[in-house]
Length: 235
Image 1: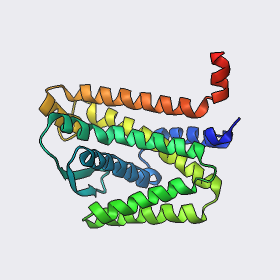
Image 2: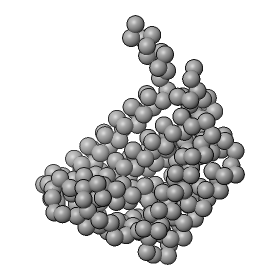
Image 3: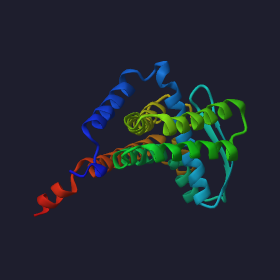
């Protein structure tokens, strides 16, 4: 088996542990910084989508209560609004899938962590204006950079798998907790789309949840199914 295309047994175990830890210890303090990091992924998804549709981003802010906001400007358009609002939750899932794929492909896990550190540093320089976000995102850049430079290969890859699993889990948890319950605060991305499209927020939540599940399933299939096995099955 080509190990450059597959997760080995230890990393599969790390993936399973990550998923279990996310469920059992969701509200414990050790997971707090990981939650904030995924919130940053969420807001970065909004920012990236804004730039892709021809808009501009003023700032990104992360709050201690695990909230986040992206202040941006873009030409008025329903399609642009749908793309930008959807890019938060779906973007978190895509980020998790990319990290999972990179963990499977990378033997050392160093360059993906360097890329993550560079992303945190870039966000800090371009879009961070408040003290809490500056300390947190700058600290993430430093921690990821140190791990990439000095951490053992197994730890680096395990961290990538954990971040990937946690990012996907957090996106789905947010959709369930923030968008699909009846006591919505009216401030979610789905609520924003509901106001401009007249489709209920729960519809957007279900669509994002289904899309996220499909993306995760396709990524795992791509990683875990041997190309050789696929060829034999085709024969």
